[in-house]
Image 1: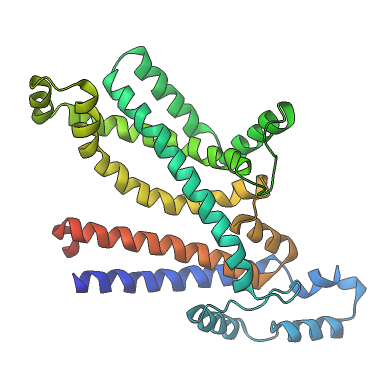
Image 2 (image 1 turned 180 degrees about the vertical axis):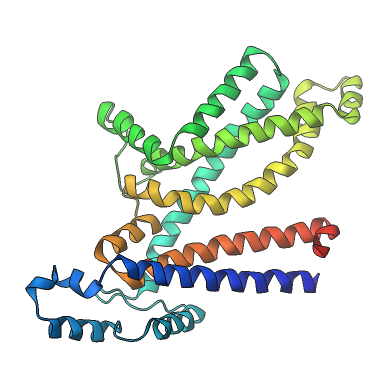
Length: 307
């Protein structure tokens, strides 16, 4: 098991190096931050621009800047923002909890919606209720998250005036962004729960439980759901990593003070350290989740350790 964990950790190191290298190179293709800071190259001399680049450390070769960034990651130092000089780690420290809180709210909402709907669809297999749930889940999968977010703002905030359109101003502010992501997650999870429940309900021990005279809800939720939930729990772990990335766009629509808004603001300002740090932290978080899932697989099924 120790060798298996070490192998996964080494793979994660290579993934981190690849991600940070690509991010560091790609964001520098977007333009010169020194020119962006002064509002255009025509307003200052080339010497002034050179002085700005030197003060920001941009005159160094790319590989030197990249290696310096890697050294900072080890100690949690992502540099300072070009706009204001605030430490990037401090900005991320304020934004990351908001993103994680919204992610957990979305995931819990999805579970609350998808489990009973999936069980109900399996029980009503082939009937109109099952067909309706399957069609709605397919429709939910077809919605882009940014379009769904905009529609919610138009309906609940502008037309009905029930919810705040943006910001993080209390429990009501969580409803629309969490529901936006939950709908998309639920569309997938409902189909997964339904398929798993159909397979479980055909097992012999379910028929034995029913022959004993147990009530239907006891058979469904105490016996069938417990076993059919295993693939759902597995998928949710993988889903959470993707959810963090999907929230980037949704946060921008709702002006949520999380990692997505921080990244978009950094892009607009050509603030390389903030953008680089934000993307790196999100990538590290997703990689960490996948490592935990891999290790859990290895503990549950010893055959996976030999792969």
